Image (cartoon, rainbow, N blue to C red; front, side, top):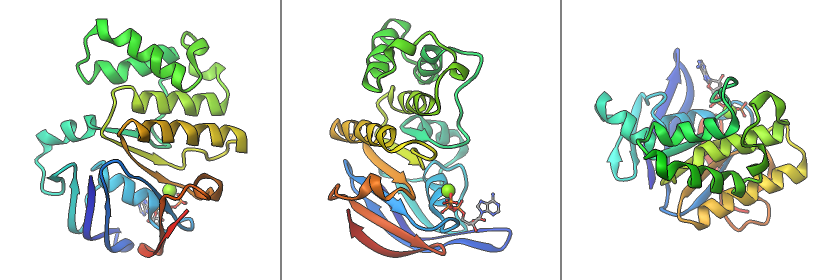
Length: 220
Ligand SMILES: Nc1ncnc2c1ncn2[C@@H]1O[C@H](COP(=O)(O)OP(=O)(O)OP(=O)(O)O)[C@@H](O)[C@H]1O
Ligand SMILES: [Mg+2]
């Protein structure tokens, strides 16, 4: 589903990733960990083509995305769900509307929308908050709404950057259960996190980055 071949990325001459090679298989749930500044967010942003590599080849769902023309980028992004820190909920819209918007921009028919949005809100335990505005939700509820927005259109790939940052252990475990459910439904999931609790005991692969390189691969 995702393949990096000798991928390097610098910011203003500073190396953020260097010579990264890995593959996340279709249907896999892969963790990326490593110290602050190790390159985790950079790696996820490269997959979403929010940024481009200096060197190497990145393949997502069969397409080489670094040479991809600008007109194909929206299509790439529509196939990916993202839980990124800088992708906040729209404060002027209800939770329902925030999630529905993710389907509307993908061209979903209004008729199909409502049941799917409500089903997804139920999955993340927010059905009763559908008509609330983001500001009236707790941090963990907002995070679950962001996840609902990322998964509502059934992406082939889900990228999550520190999805449980600042959340308590029970809420984090609940969020991890949602990711496992989505993965069980066939979505490939890649999660960047510092939180050992998320991957310990999962039996999933963990890719550890250190100073922009893959330091080692473990199994949780
Ligand atoms: N937009 C940017 N401009 C310049 N340097 C950047 C930029 N984004 C990241 N970097 C640098 O690239 C390196 C990798 O950053 P990245 O955000 O990928 O790390 P990270 O592993 O996600 O860290 P954290 O755990 O703190 O989120 C760091 O040294 C960082 O300072
Ligand atoms: Mg980061």
